[in-house]
View 1: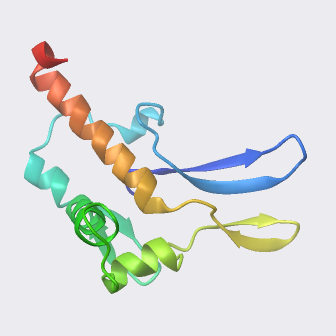
View 2: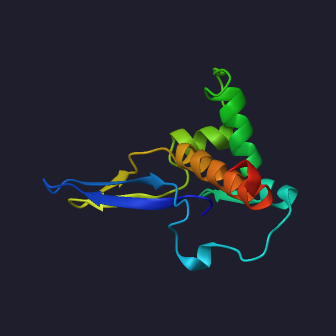
Length: 132
């Protein structure tokens, strides 16, 4: 799935919702590698694959968010794969509420950017603890 996980909540009123959340360090143990990998390998690893087989890497996500989707400025046109996954639910995840399929309430790119930032900071802290 990539660097995010799905989060399901039920409010006190019984309302259900689902969204994407960064696991940070709270994911299952199988989610985490014991050995380190190179930055290049980590950077270009596919983190999203949609229902049509279109893929996005960490590099794709970070650079698109920074350069086209409000990081530094907003483009009027987003890359098709990015737009499909972040605006048109092409990742294909839904949840059922009252017998109806519903899309997740949050956007996958936001949770992913938070998780990617966490991974970078954690790696820097391991390598340069004197700065933390």
